[in-house]
Image (cartoon, rainbow, N blue to C red; front, side, top):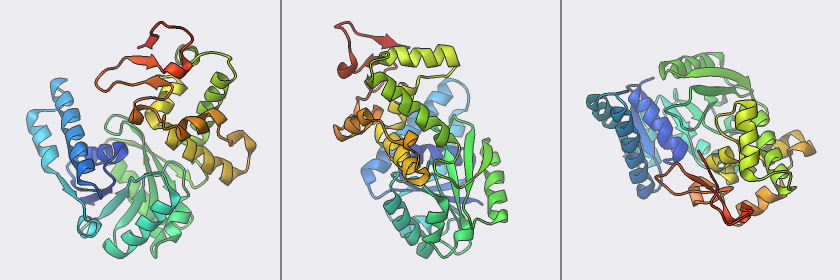
Length: 304
């Protein structure tokens, strides 16, 4: 596999494109919005510059990586010579099914079609195509260039050879692939999302504040960041979508999304992407300020 097409220029899409390009693959980054593509390239350039400054790569490495990237707004042109397509669009089942139906018609017959979905059934996505044996999940973690794990999800019809190819490809990216089976939430989110949900319920019940909950989990459980901060990074809308998939797919009330989470998403407070979630976010700073709705006093509360 030499030619990679990545669909979606958001946080995950540009991270996936960056990672493949830095590993020497020719990458077509595709999005319907030219503005989104321009922002993605600016983000990749910024992240590469940070790596140069830290002496992790050279200026030549940066230039080569950027040279491996091509942006397109045409899906047909973007996937026409792809060996692998990685879909990283919004976590919406109807949208993903529509994209895979198009990919099945537009991508070469031997191309593998992968999805970065964090919870939606690979079997269901594969069934929307005439090549379910070549459909597989590649669930990268955010931020993609840094995080080592790739959850490789086999659908009911995913072929053994395809799975082996994608496992080997992930290792070529210097990632650690872990093969899992196709159940709602897979492994990562089936375990993570109930924890985040419970943290939100704990906050809503007044057991402790935002910083207190996150501090307990960071210092007591050795988590790099607390569950509420992590939820802001993931996107509260994404957390809600995953919990809904878990709740619908597994039928267990323990996966029911916290009412506070539902209300925050309805109010447009989705975390980093909107500038406010459980914390208020200012682009370009690492300072986290507890969002006004969760402030107990007039002092500015910060965590590092």
